[in-house]
Image (tube, rainbow over all chains, first blue to last red; front, side, top):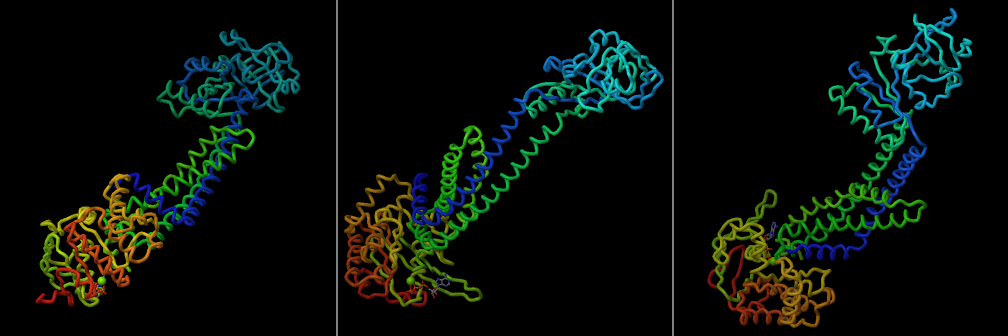
Length: 373
Length: 223
Ligand SMILES: Nc1ncnc2c1ncn2[C@@H]1O[C@H](COP(=O)(O)OP(=O)(O)OP(=O)(O)O)[C@@H](O)[C@H]1O
Ligand SMILES: [Mg+2]
């Protein structure tokens, strides 16, 4: 039997069971239609969210490295990828100024780019320069909050543990209560030997899709330090990545749910349609077998009937949702196509729902032709 | 052409066994015109089904054109039915959703013949049975006699060697019945097709050249 004839016969059958066929197609089309709409809207929202992040400008990515072996110099390659990058480490220590003690102040070892990365504004004095770093100078900047508590002035000295450090500037705290002292990173590593061994933080200020950046940075680090894959963590500005991921997750759940429901409904429909038509057409199948149809001819005929139904349903839903969404403001064809393909591919197994009933049909014996009236 | 030796057919009905055929011997030569008569339940249809390769015997040997039918696969049997055997049934058994032309074409569809050739051959056959002007009618728009003639055209379309008819006139008035027997008789004489007709009706059996009587799953001796 020719392939085109299978389709010719299948079409003929489906047309003669108009009501049933159109019912199945409608259920299927509605399912695909609503899933496509759903996926389209969530994808679009997500896309807009991501592009709004990029539009928003730069974001802060921090990489925490917890390995002695990965030193500052070995990380400097990152600077060629991200111009605005700062390397830092911090700990809490007691400080003394004019015999007054303050417990647990954040001390941060920094590089000169810290100022740009964190958009620090200097109220008095100057920020740390490359030469401070190079010569491991005992200098520091204090935040404005601390400055008010102790009336520290530029040029005076404070004590961090037992080290006398000269104040070279005062900077504004971004938020109240974030009192801290910054010193050159090299000095920090000198003074706090133990702490410096624990971890180093790299902070990058950059633009771009956070998800992509995260992957990219991870890839770069893993290539450089293949044996230390678990020694670094990459963080984003609070909540940002999580938000995107969460959204993606819920939308996937939604689609899966709807897709599954559609699958069950339409699949069940197709199976029962073909089952019913086999019962009804028991005699016909017998006649077909008597005049020369092979088992496989019958099997494929029924399978193709089921497949045709799902193909028509998919096409119908595609046209319908394109029409519907095409009229919405800011229509995005690429997102539409992507969503539609996703949903259709979930519905693809539907065309196989006819497998079992088709097998049943092919088992009808040719003797039936002579036995039924 | 047909050699049947000691054919039996037993139907298992739960605990009970129904012996529909109890050792039938029959040989039919090329271009014979044969009828099989017998009371209801004597196993005529069962016998015809076996002869037409629609069913397999429980026991016995069946040679069709010197080939052992029991050794053929399901696909080979389909092929045999398609190419060598034409069926005519009491209830016509046309597919209701197809026109008479499409019905007649169907065996050629299974054979894989191209559409244009199919059309031509189906039309020829319908013309041969006198229905050349009814090709677009659906079965429900045809009289019983016309439906049976369409069924004969379908049986003919693949130029079979054997036509098997189970009560072909059972649902027809005597005039249509006569027409049908006329057509079968002509096919036998002019195209040398072997024809086997199962019937209750002595008038129908009269038209054939040889009559076999089946009773309780056996042929009566002496005929
Ligand atoms: N599938 C089956 N299962 C069990 N018994 C069957 C089956 N088919 C036929 N029989 C039995 O086999 C016997 C012969 O049946 P068959 O149909 O061959 O008779 P028939 O001579 O064609 O009768 P009729 O003239 O009424 O058509 C009957 O007793 C019937 O009940
Ligand atoms: Mg019968």
